[in-house]
Figure (tube, rainbow, N blue to C red):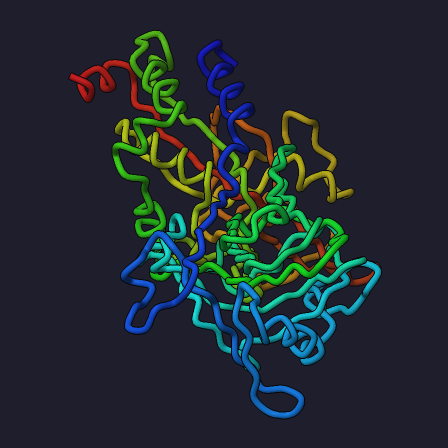
Length: 433
């Protein structure tokens, strides 16, 4: 790897985990005066009222708790149910892993609106869907480290809103790529606290030692999602935002150097975030007829954080950018005991447009079938890529059924990657002039 590519690689490795969560605070208004609404005071929050149907009929409670509302919290807790969590596509109840109670949106309503209270990043392009009301009580409310299960391909994150109520402990710790951020909401009672993070981030809720931590959880979805790769790559940061990114100057300097990739080439960046895997399967022929077009629907994918920044930076500097699903040849052959070729004969990597999908070959094959035929069913060969990052996640499956002494299933993992076409230096100089 040349020095400039190595510098790009080092930069991406050191800055790749910097944009995975954010948070803030909205001060409370002392009272909600008649005739006022949240639109009139976008930077402060009126008291938040939740209404629910439970034991004995209809109930309501207003945060911060004052007067009679303080006595209503036990009733709210009583009408909640023990909180479950997702594991292997199932809802699991295990109080040794998660100790909390929850209420589904079919049971309650709340007058809190995150859009008009200035929560960072909520725009017309984002749908914040209320999902649960959660209560973690002392002395042992907690949720061990976990990763949320996306509810849909367009879900990209979660928003947690902590209602103003005194408690100690219960910090939200969010982790990604070896870095972590802790949101401690126990010290501020006069404000609504919030945090948002990407759905592939590991996170946990520390033990609540006093009081009760009451939160609203929202699932975040892209309102309009791309139906094809052109739409996918239409997701961009604003030009001013792109130029303010540290990566922009590093890439700009590299592209301005006439000695860098004089003849042009391809840079590859494996996506730093994981993306939902569609449960739908697509069949592909293992031996397509000559000239046969294989129609593979593209799964809509909403780029996150660093991945979106990488795409935006290279596009802003005039590069052709693609997001592809990659099947690595050597990793595939490690699972194929019948391959007898030398290392240099191993088939190369393959690229395809089916992101986040499970592909199944239409026909099975004998377990001594040529691996090249299986690889060709996946997509086009990928040559001469300078990889700037290493594989971080598996974002799809490629499945081939076999028969021989006994039937079998070969499952190979694929990875989402950003491919950047770098023009020859002479063409780059014309673009910049």
